[in-house]
Image 1 (cartoon, rainbow, N blue to C red):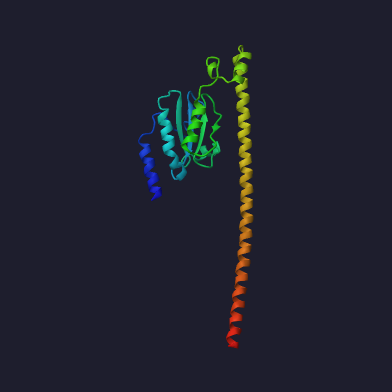
Image 2 (tube, one colour):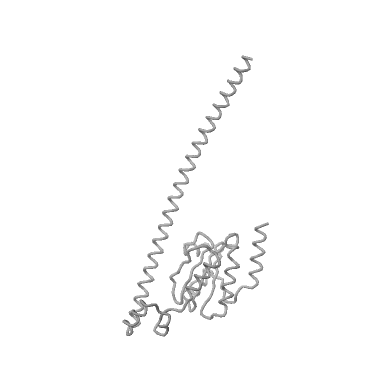
Length: 226
């Protein structure tokens, strides 16, 4: 019954999907990500209950930003685009990432898939950025940097962007390695636990059998004495 209600909820939300929501596939991913729009990407699967529960939040946000010509919302169906999801490294669904214009480096959302937290992620990601034309949104540290670099040239800022993107990629690779190591440790721990439980269950069955035998022997002796 619960699954049916969730499915109906998704169908009701699907009919009002925003015009700026894209279906991302292996054939268009290179055009969509790193293109001329900022984009939030949702990784999901239709048989994932958590994904179904998240759908109303996603549709609400995509509707809210539908009038923004610089922003898009894209969905990758990991039940279809299996290889694409593997390349991106997403195993736990749903997952959410943000790519800024002309960038292929993901800003991963980390947290519960709840409306308040996800909305804050979207707001923070789309907030005006400190530039020479928008000094009003610069914090103190950024303003000091801007004042000291008024004559910065394009090739210099290009180098800074490339260095930061490289750093982010290294961090993501290190985190993926860390997750793999944790999964291996968990698998080893689970195997040890199963082995331990099996041994204890055998011992328990053995001791219970002995107890039944002793109880039966005692009961027989009592019957004889009576």
